View 1 (cartoon, one colour):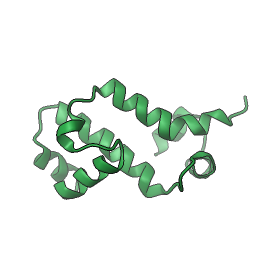
View 2 (cartoon, rainbow, N blue to C red):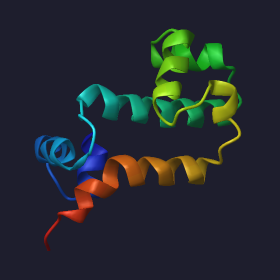
View 3 (cartoon, rainbow, N blue to C red):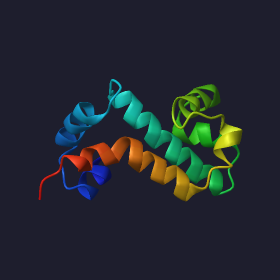
View 4 (cartoon, rainbow, N blue to C red):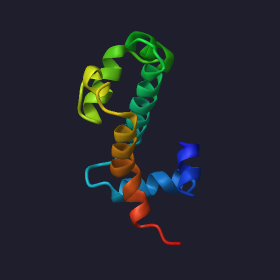
Amino acid sequence: MAELADAVQRSPVTLFQQFRQRVAEPATLNRLLGGLVVLRARQLRDSGLEWKTVSTRLGIHRSTLNRKSKTWPGCTLSDLERISPDQLLAAFATEHVGPLLEGRTP
């Protein structure tokens, strides 16, 4: 979260407050972190790890990882592999980071 806050030049608290204000559906820290978990899981999977090993590394059950993937970006782990990393990151930025930047003033 700190790296994301640095990237958009906001404190983590401010970042989350803006996130909650800007997202159309109710925003929760769990939803934001779930998206970050999916991004990290995909990165680990791309490094050659099996999904079971990925979930173990992340400290969550595979079924939880699959549920998070179904929540965002809305697909199973098998389908997640078919989305390019660039597309996945762009979708995360659009859905989670973009709304924060729209209201940003220089």
